[in-house]
Length: 443
Image (cartoon, rainbow, N blue to C red; front, side, top):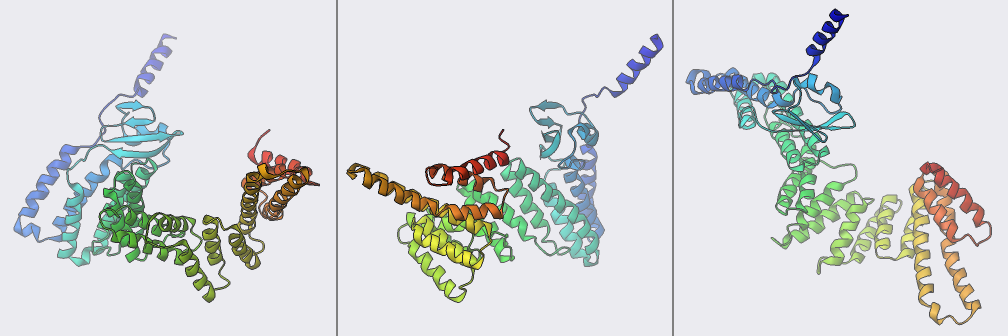
């Protein structure tokens, strides 16, 4: 029995982790860099592409070393094995190592931040070295491209995980480093997405510190120059904010902000952000424009493309923002003619008719003090309910088209409760109330 206990103690001792420094031999990297410095100072060696390629590879390896074993989604229990050591400290959801802090969520690695560089200025040295290697021997482009792509992927991933951790400055820096490496002739093609990612983050940071708006403008404009367009056209909305944020420095930026939105709405007429930006701009800045100009612009486009549902959608948006519910509804009725079985169209028509009902109801409440008879009161109430009732068939059609829509079920529940005294509506309320609870998982 004593022998068994002794063996258990021995085995336990073997698996007890020890806290040691993250295993990166920075002294070795520095010694190799000194040798590389001597090589590029040597006229003969400095004329060889391999000398510069090896220097670039050395700096690249130094950049990659702190995070080479990390990836998003790594099981937290595997983290010490992956890194090679136990963390020096664990605080809340962060596992701290010598070179990197790793963020854990739900038992998985979600992000990390590099605390210090193995070789100072390694990025600039790597970029310079790979460029020099190509200049001395363009035939070595495939080998240089392979090495660069490893480094580009590192910065792309760093940008992504930093974004997830809301470390936006780090994310911007990483995306720009990635795209700068792509300028090397061995690759020669910049990925416009990196400029877009950096630009939208800079636009976001600009709300906290206006200095970022200029960077955002630069990056987003570069993305456009390279032909980038995101699926929804949000680039134009972010570019608007970057120009608008610089309006105090130069009033011309107001015009640029307006033009960014106008260009965007022409290409992406369904983008509600862009339309809201235009309404905001036209109603808050004197001399920039009138919302009616938007209608005129859209109507002109509709004369050329009368069956373009997206343009009718944009037209409806403008009138909704202007609280002209009749024209808003007319625009969406046109969309319904074009796409009668579209969920969004039916849902929005129901929503807009409810908004129109709210307007009729407000007007009724405003004149309550002047109503002197029960007959007039009932007539006014009947008018209100009739306005709300127009919403019902559209929302019910939308519910048929998308039976899993929680939003639609909720609107139907609220609407039917409002109209519960109308014939047959209480049964509908019970139906949609039960459906809403089911979709929401409410017992």
